[in-house]
Length: 301
Picture (tube, rainbow, N blue to C red):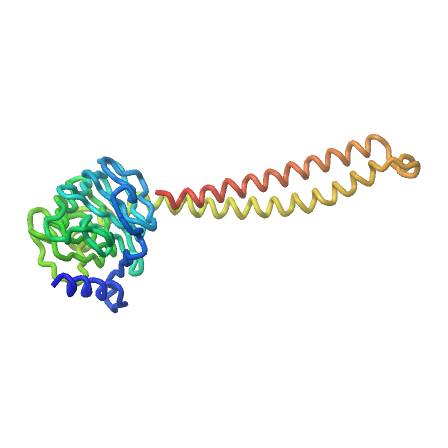
C-alpha cells in the first residue's frame, strides 16, 4: 500500500494537469546518503519576513509562528518537514504562493518523498498542521500541499484564500474554517469568499488583498523610473565628460603653441567644465543604483 501511495503522489504532482495541480520536487537529489537532522536547516519560533526556497527542506523542530502584525512570505518551492507535535501558527499574514512547477510543501519529517533516508513510514497524525488564528486575515496559500498532519488547516477566520491546494493523508480533517469542516477530496482544492459574500457581510472587498501590494508596486515602478532617469543622466554626463576631458587635456599640453593660444583662465574654465561633467556622470550612476536598489527591495516583502 505504501508503494502504491508514493507512486500515486509522485504521478499526481509530476503530471501536468488542466486543473493546475501542483508538482512538487522529488527528494532523491535533495539529501545525501546517511541523511540526518543536522543536514537540514532547522526552524522554530517566530519566522523571518521571507523564507527562501532552497535545495534541501527545512526541518521544523518546534512550533513556528507568524506573529500578529507581521507578514511572512514563503518562496515557491520551499519544503517544510515537521517533527511530531509541531505545527505552524499564523496570527499575522502568511503569503505562501507556490507554482505548478514549484509548490510549497508542508509534510511529516518521515515523508520519504522529501527525506529519502527516513527510517519511519509517514502516517496521518505525524504533526499538528496549520493553525490560522483570528488575526490571520488576508493569508493566502497557493499551490501548497499539506500532508500527514492531524488537522490539515484549521482557520479561525473565514477571510483567507486557498488556491489549488492539495490535502492528502491528514488524520482528523483536511480543512476547518470557523469550526466548520469542509469536504475536501484528494483533488486540488480552492477556498475563498466571493465579492458578493463580502458585500452581504458589509466588509470591504479588498480585505483579502495583499496589504503590501500597493507599497510594493509603488516602490517597484518608482525604482524603474529612477533607474531610467539615472541611466539617461549618466549617458549624457559621460558623453559630455569625454569631450570636456579631451578639451582639458589638449589645453594642458606643455607646448609653446598651446601656451600661446590659451590663457590660464581658459584652462581653468575647461577644468571646471570637466569636473561638472564628471559630477553629472557620477550623479547619474548613483541615481541609477538607487533605483535598482528600490526595484530589488520591492521583491523582499
